[in-house]
Length: 223
Image (cartoon, rainbow, N blue to C red; front, side, top):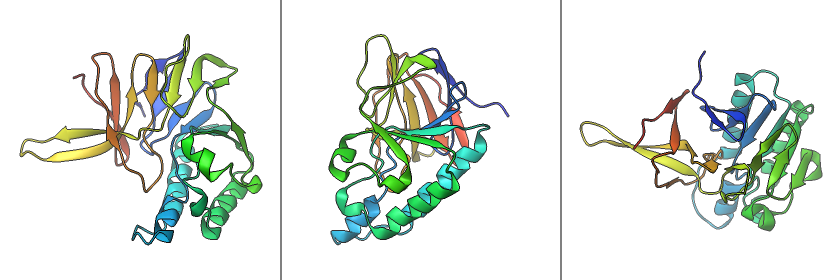
């Protein structure tokens, strides 16, 4: 099946409906802003929020892995854990159990702003933690970061801002969808977590936007 894709930094970038980015040449999935434990941290503050968000996020991660052949690893582009107060036993155990089922995968976290407060993930998650920007040996034209800040000579793939796009219909309907937003120097992935907000970015003439809708990714026409 043909998939929409983008080319930048000498790499082929394949956006997936699950809101992960597939790098076929590196056999890596990129995931931004999983925010594990966010709902838990809000509930501890007395805010009524959805249950089972960790389970939903992990199920979508499995769906993304199943969609790609030969995945060797996952790089999380920051904010893997939401906050220290979100490190509840149920959340930690759910991710640890998922990790045991995927022991062969190499997991890397490029630390983001929330990771600084939440701390590195537990040892039994088996995640290597690095600071941004992080380079891939086989793809020297890319820089993997959490913050979408341009880097001289490299195309940046990042998260942090949770990009979305608003689509209009004939009857004045408005549909807000998570999206991949690729600019000339920086590409921003949608938030992967189940319980996250979103932000509509200004769109330049050279930007390419891919909206995630259900089981599809749609390349949107230019502005």
